[in-house]
Image 1 (cartoon, rainbow, N blue to C red):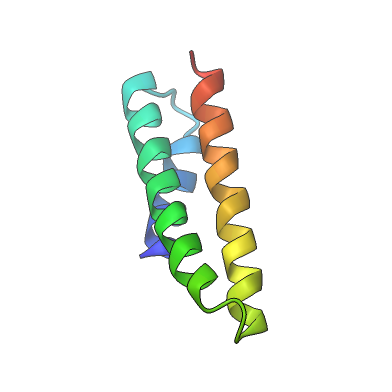
Image 2: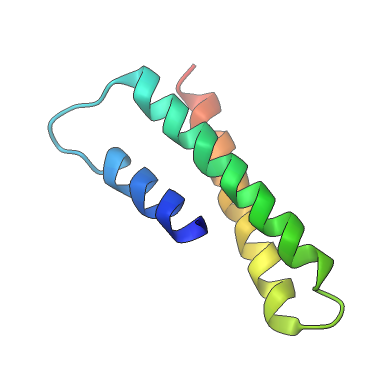
Length: 74
């Protein structure tokens, strides 16, 4: 699910034909939600598995990036 959310977000953000701010905002918020869920799940296993710790950190960075970009839209 994480990859699907990330790929869909990247596709919307990289459109060269313009954008709809409402759609951009909605997909960024959805991506942030998916990243938060992934980070939470991986975080539960971070103490036992290093790859889960790394995944949780990456998902939290992605969530923050989505939130920052959403905030910049106004």
